Amino acid sequence: MPRQPITLRPSAADPDARVINNLPGRFSTEDWRVYYWDTAASGELRDRHCIIQLPLGSAAHAPPITIGEPGMVLKVRRWGVTISSGLFELIGFDPQAYLTHDAQAYPGGDDEEIVDVVMRAVNFDLPSEFVIASDEHPFLLFDPAGELKGSYTKGHSYLGALAYHVSKGRTTATFNTMRHFDRELYDRAVNSLLRAL
Image (cartoon, rainbow, N blue to C red; front, side, top):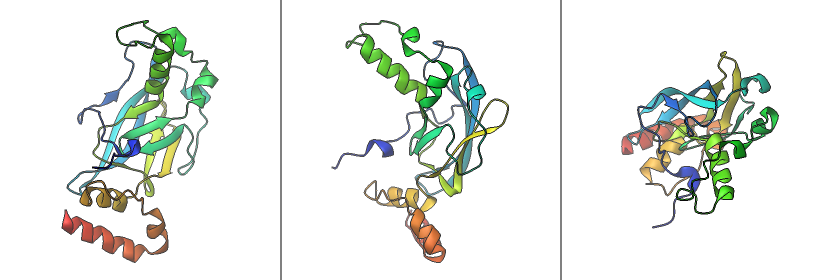
């Protein structure tokens, strides 16, 4: 069986999670709300939301945006979202300040733990089966005051998620171009794949 690309691995988040913090208790945080669309393996399209906790001070350094501008969002994948690590430079986030120096958990020492802290601080698995993020179903990130500070519209479309489910992971196209250039064909394909599911 071919290896599944990391971008299309399943989410590891608890399906009922409301608050996502990958490093609980390590640093002070603020609550950012994410709104997104998720496609179940049955083809059901679901609107979802939850809170991700970013380091305190993040909101003050993130300018407001409009839908279609990435802002704080680097990438949206099937499993969730990656926040732009440039934020941490702006707020002076130093991963070394949050190390546990646990040799059992990190046999590679502090360097291994620093990489882990940075990766956990920017990558959030979200409750989902397949997060989609297109201009039709945008991924939205709001700061604690409710200002839009991140969006993503260049990920998988609804058809892309359906094709992935029907093909059992062999089809990984986004189908965004088809939706833009031939909406009628796109809609027929969606209906066909829904019947197949």
